Amino acid sequence: MEKPIQDQSQSSKLENMFESWADPLGNLFVSIFHRITLFGIGAATVWSSIDTFLVIIGKGAASIQDLLLLFIFLEIGAMVGIYFKTNHMPVRFLIYVAITAVTRLIIDLVNTQHEANLGILLLGSTIFILALANALVRYASYKFPSAPSDSN
Image (cartoon, one colour):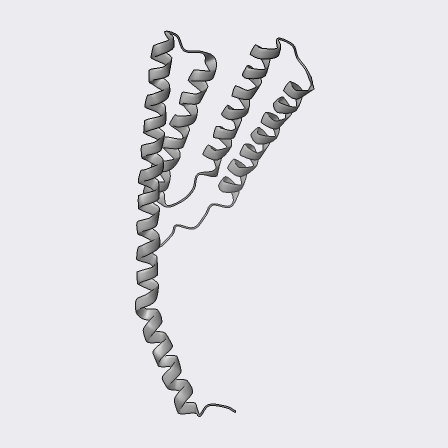
């Protein structure tokens, strides 16, 4: 059974009225969630980097793995800052974090096994693939730049 035209019009008006206040409210909640989460990630990054730095001081010397870990914290902090300012996730920084993390794994393997093996070759191949992905992302962002968002 179909609704009369007048009832459909009333329904559309009610739906439009609901959307006129629900959409901005939803956007506000998402924005607040983003900001709180960014502060949380930033605070956890600062806390973890300070803790790592204190461990390094306690050891009396920094290993290359310690320094790479600090670089990972720096890259995460930069990602948070960029996302905070632009509302865009810098995918390249995620790739940099992954490359640095895999490099730490390679160094750990070399330090513990003292020999080259297939695992190191595979991890090296992983870094190569990540570097290619980074080049592809850079090329794509140069060739096909994203349109400026209206939310800024």
